[in-house]
Image (tube, rainbow, N blue to C red):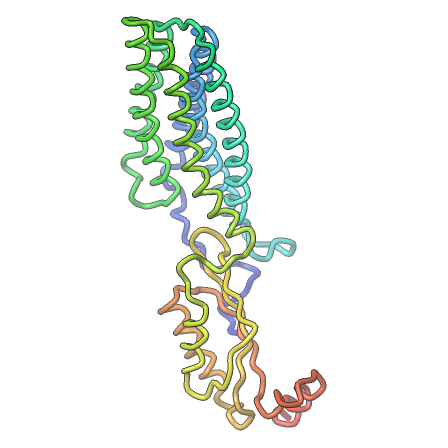
Length: 316
C-alpha cells in the first residue's frame, strides 16, 4: 500500500474546522425553544397544524444538532478500533432522526384525517400568535446561517430547510387568520396533512441516501461497468475483478479491486498502480483505493496455492 493511505490517521479530512460552530449551536437552541413553544401552543389552541409546524422545525433542529455533534465527533482522529475515523456518526444520526420523523409525520396525518371527519373548534388567535413567533425564529435562524451557507453541505441544507419552515409557518399564520375570521376549522387538518406530506417527501429522499451509505451501495450515478472498462484499458492491465465502490460518508468514495497483470510486468507494478489510482481520483473522484495485484498465467488454474507460486517465483 502507498504510504499516503494510512487508515490510522485518516489524513484527508477537510472539515472547515469550525464552520459557524457557535452559530450552529445557537440556532439549534433557538429552534428547540420554538419547537417547545409551538407544541404547547398547539395543545392549548387545539391546532394540529401548529404541532406539525413544530415537527417541521424540530426536524431541522435535530438535523442541525446532529450535524453539530457529528462535526465535533468526526473531528476525532481515527483510532485502533475505528480505523476509518468517526465519519459515519453523522449518517447514523441522520438515519435515526429521519425514521423518528417519518413515524411522527405519519401519526399526524392519521390524526388530521380523523379531524377532517370530526372537526374540532380551534383558538385561532393563539394559533396565529404562536405561528408568528415560529416565523420570526425561522427568519432569525436564516440570518444566522446565511453567511455560512456556501461552505458546508450541512449548513446549506439547514439553511434551505429553515426557508421551507418559514413557508410552512406562513401557512399556519394565514390558517389562524382564516379561522379567526371565518371559523373554517377544516383548514387546520388540511394544513397538517400538507406539512406532514412535505416532511415525508423530504425524509424519504434523505432516508434513501443514508440507507445507501450504510448499506455500502455503489454511489448513485456511478457506472461500475464503465469504471471497470476504463481501468481495464490502462496499459498492461489484463483483467479487473472483485470491484467494490462505496461511500465512506457523504463526500468520500472508496474502492477496492483485484487487478490482473502479466507476471513479466511485475517490475512495472508500482507504475501501473499509480496510473490506476490517478485515473480513479481524477475521473471518478475516488480518494481512497485499495488494489490487489494478481498475475495472469495463474488465473487459468485458479486456486490459491498457484497464486502464491506465481508471486514467489517472480518475487525472489
